[in-house]
Amino acid sequence: MTDIKEVGSLIFFIDDNLYSVPAAGTVYFIAENKKVLIDTGPATSLEAVLNGIRQTGFKPEEIDYIIITHIHLDHSGGVGTMLQHMPRAKVIAHHKAIKHLIDPSRLVNSAIEAQGREFVSGNGEVLPVPEPRLIPVNDGETLDLGNGQVLTFMSCPGHAPHELCIIESRNRGIFVGDAVGHYINGTDMMVPVTPPPSFDLEQYIATLERLKGLDADKIYFAHSGTSPQVQEKLDLAVRKLRDRDNIIAQAAAENNLEQAAERVIKHVSNELVWLREHLRPVYDYWTGVDIPMSAAEHVRYYKKKHGL
Ligand SMILES: [Zn+2]
Image 1: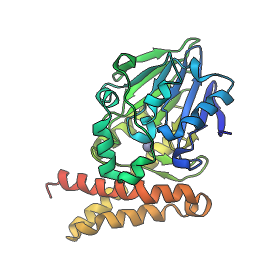
Image 2: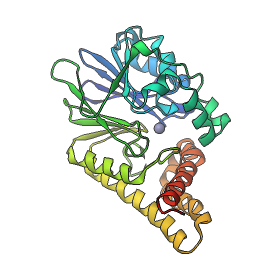
Image 3: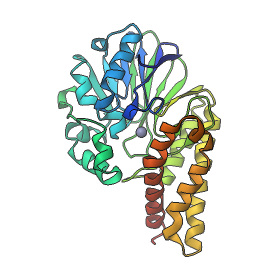
Image 4: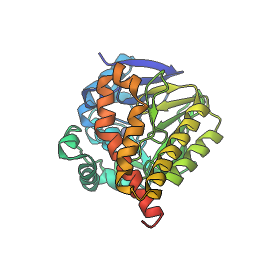
């Protein structure tokens, strides 16, 4: 059984059992007149997602649109495989993401560079998306799902240049992908993730400020779950990013920049005591891959920005 919950009117959380870790990754299913899947997870999440949709009482064949929040493999790696089970589905993505969905080879190589071949193999096969099934979108475009539910797309760079947030009108919620951070449902565990190759701190913070301006009622995180404390979570993400930047600046001031990544990793890991004690597999996933990768990339960004 897949873990599913209705988290907004006609909006279902589906735990995609990301990398066989429960509570690590979420895709969302919107069951309006037009049916939408937000993210697919990697190909290794296929069964969990298909079962999750069936458990809501609908069929995967009914999906009209798959919307990709961004093309990192844990979100979109399975889209080509998923399409084989959704014969009428079109794939909507940020216009900057389209070429990587048509030809995922550069994306896969960049993931191997960042995360190592063994970790990346956990995504399973990354199939291309046939071009006629793709719909590029830009900031401000909308998609009417019928019965008053309208989605608005928002370009949200920072975590990645091709990150798309989706605002839904029925519950005044925002699907944020990884634009805010990794979160654990019902806790104050929240960690912004700043992966290579294109993390940009100032853009990330500008995106968070812009999301705050929407005054939304709900955030749907891709990792993992939903929170009604929208402004609080957005403020927390800004503060955590600034804290890390200050740690790196401090190391630079001490002429110790080579220790900066290690200090950031320690700082972030210290925030995760609850996670280590209660959700060890998620803690291991975050601290094993995401946090070291984020720290190294933040230091790279800092050096580049300050010409070091
Ligand atoms: Zn992710």
